Length: 263
Image (cartoon, rainbow, N blue to C red):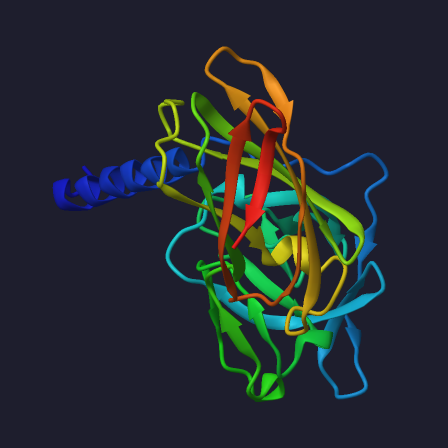
């Protein structure tokens, strides 16, 4: 008869493995049709690298804590001859500076992270679940865990407005749209300072993250009846990530309608 202690340990292990599988109820994205195989090649410095989308990636680190399958972006293919050893982009890394290799055949397999070699000696946005293994080949390559922003303050000095919507251009190219409002969609109070954030991911599409960039923003407002109106005027300024501009004001008059004041 099996020793009761041994049986208890086996049952406990089965329970723990079952519990781990419950963490990732979202399945990992499947292989696309005709998925390619990525081979590890030797770089000029002797590192094992993977090439994707014109960039070279070398092994950088492992998992810090846990990571949900919801963090997995596009499934790019598989590595070598093992279709279970899959290569993914990451949802929290909009610049594809990192790729993750994850084995989908077992519960406890540890993901491994590859980093683009063109980011060596640079301080780049890094998802918090990536832990550097400190390979000497990466030298002083930096990593920061918060996305940098350029912030613009705006105050509504008009009545019955519930949202100020905006459209932003970076260096003359359309970047993003958004809006500022209260969480309960209540009427904006006169004098309350709201903030517009221009994210790093929006800036690096059009310029280097540590260089100044030109911002152009136009506005519309939505009143408490749901009507949408254009705000006359626009905000143009040169900014940098980490910078703050205070402040803009939205006013209203019978003759001009809604208009922008830049202080």
